[in-house]
Amino acid sequence: MPRPDADLSVEGVMRATRGEIGADAFAAVSGRMDPAQLSLAARHDPLLLKAAAYGLTPGWETLTLAGKPTLVSGETGLRAQRLNAATPNVLGALSAARPFILRTTGEDRRRAVRCLTQAIYYEAALEPTEGQEAVAQVVLNRVRDPNYPNTVCGVVFQGAERITGCQFSFTCDGALSRAPAPWAWKRAEAVAVRALNGQVAARVGTATHYHADYVHPWWAPTLLKIDQIGAHIFYRWKGVYGETGAFTQAYAGREPVIDEARFAKSRVQVASLTEVGSDEELAAAAAAGVPAVRTVEIDGVTRTVGVASLGGRRLPTPEEVAAVNAGIAAFEAQAAPEKAVPPPGVTPMDVEEVGRPGD
Image (cartoon, rainbow, N blue to C red; front, side, top):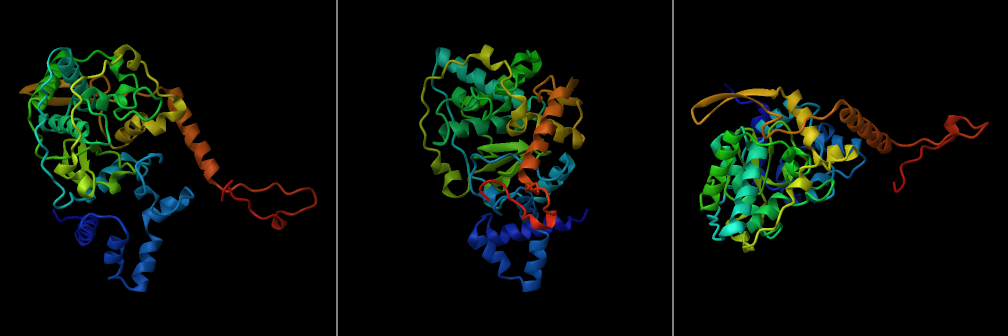
């Protein structure tokens, strides 16, 4: 089938900019355009439109990976899927990861295997084996990345003690309260053991991030897209920070003790669900047509399983959905300019519009 125009356009921009987003890359693209083309591009730039809608400075998504809200591009998961599909893998982005060989023994090894197995199971239970291996690779890459903890369990449960900020949502949304399916757990555990014995997921290399294809997180353009395996799209840091030589952090050798009983209780407050993203992703998945029940073939055996009960996201209650919608409405109301109430005898035309505090 012919490739869509959006795919060709995105690839052309990526080649011109070499995957970078910045002043030099912008000049490389805009320098070839006449004033009419520039004006038309600005008029239809979704980034500028979205920034204007939230009262933010254009380009805010590329500034930092911390402290910004998670926004799904488009109204439905289908639009996010199309946007993700139109974004090609960055040429030359793949860098080989070094084998990670866990040399600890005893209780520390048991904890490392269990934590990595939990990440694989709850994040990718129904993904192909290659997809599970890629998730394991992301965890181990973070262990070696100076930006993250230097233990397997530390990486997996990073931020789990907070209401928001957990790196893997299963550690704070109550998913751990569901007993794993034995056959799926054994499969995930086998992948974890191989990864800790030095197996490398060559297709994702030094990837440190991933997300499902039915969402398009705000941080995606700030990283380099490497590849998609199953439903997950994998990314690495830009520049030298994503190269093999940047992963210099030494493994601590001792794994922290994880209070699984505590983390099995959901600490996701209703008001913060959109920040954590679990229910937001679930809603996008439903909009994208991702079924609640799937028939999968794993290791030659065909199984019909419920996605939510097997490594899937926690289903929101109607009350939580209503609360999330109310929170979004409140946020949008804050973003809208406030108008002063005219005193008696003064017409609305005599009153200037008042912006938000700090405008």
